[in-house]
Length: 438
Image (cartoon, rainbow, N blue to C red; front, side):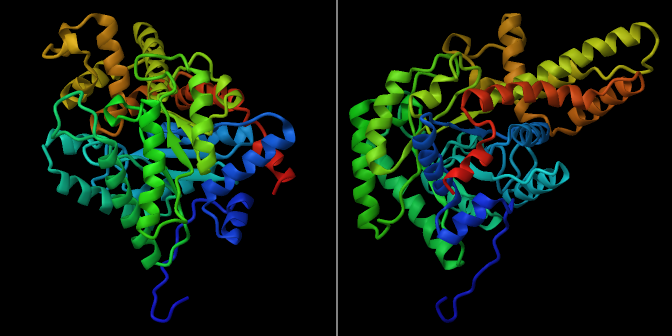
């Protein structure tokens, strides 16, 4: 340690053997894990894909830890700045509070495996508030840099650097790849300077986006981005820093659910010589998840699916509550579905997901199927609202009085989705299997 340098304590969300070995080797834990998974694939003859869970509610966080414990698999949380941030996001958590919550849940559930904590989509205007309030590029970049600092201090393991949105450009205009590279390097350089100044261990990085507005969906631009990023990092004295994940557009988006393994294989071939793995986003309800590891995908994010399953479970509880009420067994209905609908409506966040032909229409003027979907996916933004929490508590109390276990029913509904991905991504008993190569 250099004389006069202050070393700050790092919060660790777990004390797993994988994390301890990564720290001893001086390698970021996510890089270490992916390297060992790669080595295991050569031993077993089949690959694995790391599951990244978007922590869009406290219930999802608990369900994910329970499912990971049952699967014997490492777990990654990828939190957007909309979810967890300096302003507490829509979960009501700062970066420090998020890490502490995950740590407490893991301890309460006696989960002793690896938990990777990551920022998802850290970049200008990706946070809804920045777009809604019309922030400038300088204001956005300053906020993202401070968010990264808070994440590093809190003990995050990975930062997704995603400066592919530019609200100053006409809609549909891709940002030049040179600008994406420049802003990516600016954010990585800031994070590295901050981390090193505080004497903290190395962290992992993820770059790129699956969104067309980022301009990286085209293969030639994708290749130019990787080559340009490598050159720019070296020029800034960051040659030892390189993203473990590069986000690839592999067929899935908000409205499609078919993964394209051939595109994934091509992107993997382009990224692997650099030492990176391809990461898929919008994996929710994907029809062919088993093809992710088969095609070499390093990781995949799932988020809105868990919110929809949480909503569906609450809707089932509301149906049971109504039956009980009709029999005179519930003194006061919770009205949970109406409370959720009105909370989503007042948030105005549903407008973000309107189709072009729906722009300007009121939520309640849309067909019932579309309205229900917008409410379901919009619930992630309002789970922490006081009126929603109160209604949910009343719903749970009404059912508990009648012999039901409502929280368990909701958790299990989310866990069914999680279990599906742990199986399809070849992650079952992974921590034990990794002992072959540790």
